[in-house]
Amino acid sequence: MACLGLLLAGCANGHDAVDQSAGTAQRFVSGDGTLTQYPRGARPIAPTVTGDLVSGGKFSLASYRGSMAVLNFWGSWCAPCRAEIIHLVEVADTTKDLGVRFVGVNVRDSRDKAAAFDRAHQVPYPSLFDPAGRVALAFRDTPPNAIPATIVIDREGRVAAVFRKPLVVHELRPVVTKIAAEN
Image 1 (cartoon, rainbow, N blue to C red):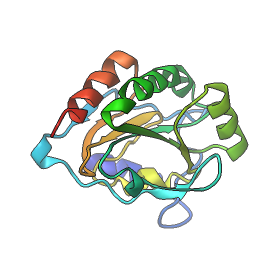
Image 2: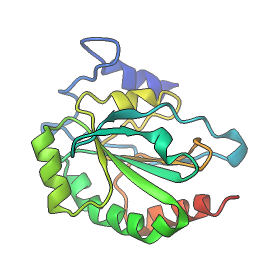
Image 3: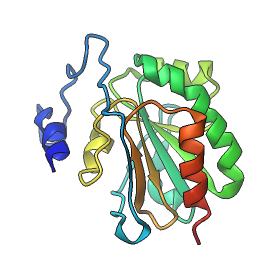
């Protein structure tokens, strides 16, 4: 509950806006380095996630129903995000045959910078364009609280894990493959 209070304390200019000046001078909001995993029977339901894609068009997390979803919150301005993208792309590539689908959630960025980042790093999955951070706010029970952060959603649309730190392959892949193996 304290995490929710911290997340909401940064809100300004409306009921679902995020303080764009939060974080360091480089706008990086440091995570607490945690991984929170939820037992299968106690997983909170993921909120409705919809929005515009960086590349244009619309996205709805509901289109991933029946598949696992991995949401990564990132920004082109974020050095840890730039460092982790190679790991995310590798895990996305090596787990797609397990029914795992990735989506980025770009925050505090311009659409041009976000698109350039995706092109430069050859990101094979879509990214939501969410400069105000509304998607993060929707995760009230399991807030990402940091940039970068990654939320793993099981096939039933429930939050299975939340990473509040930059990731590498050997941290993310075992969690994703374990949840993907659930029947």
